[in-house]
Image (cartoon, rainbow, N blue to C red; front, side):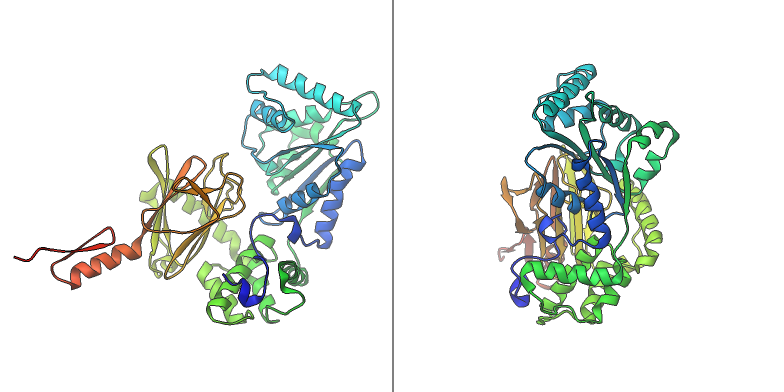
Length: 428
């Protein structure tokens, strides 16, 4: 990797939420203060919203890292669940085994637990990430839980974090009772260009770059032009640009590295991303119905270097063409390849394809990635490799190898090529 070239101790732009790298812009600091207020006030019920990649999860992780020892926490990330599944998930976080309980017993157990913790002098906090996916029934259960109280005060603090659609749900007439209990609501907007520059410098400094200028000054307007100040997009572009400078044998990122990275990622300007998001939605429908799919002219111009087959229960459910660039695999819809499974993390792994190799890398997922039954952090993919994530398999097919076999068969008479082994035909 490029660490030695740039004199860094660790990767500065990983996508996984790491509290160590948290950059507190004014609005991020305010959102974190609102989270902290749930501990100070007995009626703590806070809602934090933000666009995909705005840094909500990193804020939560930073907040949890600093939380006091007298606070009992339930953190829920899987939100596409029924009301009973949700109540069970909360109780599991509190140390119960509730899977044979009926709903009435689940509620009674939770209520008793909350009262017991209050009596013992402990605070109880429920954090729900990706809360925009919660159904109306689950949100109603949260309202009921928020109402558990002693004769003096409420006993459950709540933080809901999610994309802007969460606000739309909370403003629905049928949830007016829940909305009235929310004490603070805050929306995380994107970073300004000045904040984005400070964000990049902060992450480089934490990674060991000190105060060295690793990105040339004229790169920042271009980065902002294509990321709009969205932290996750900034991470992706900056990481790709560092790799571009590294392969160019340079220890500073130039404007040409940003431009080549944008081309590699096939990005459009951030202002035009709404149209692109609509296209992505259509493409996802094509993935469900391969006969409807058609490649864009930009994609067709790049050669297919590999294929990724996604399989579960012995059947292939999706196929993805791999060209030069990077795809992120994870549970949520903002990933390049979504695998909607509770065994898959929000951003589980990434696959980086270059002209000569293809590498899969774990993004600090909960359940990891496995090759030949061995958990790996990073693995160079070979033709036929099967990578297991949760209950799914990613099967890698190297198209470069297939082309080289065909080329050899066409240019060298009397030679057969099978699974990478050259066998000469016997002479007559």
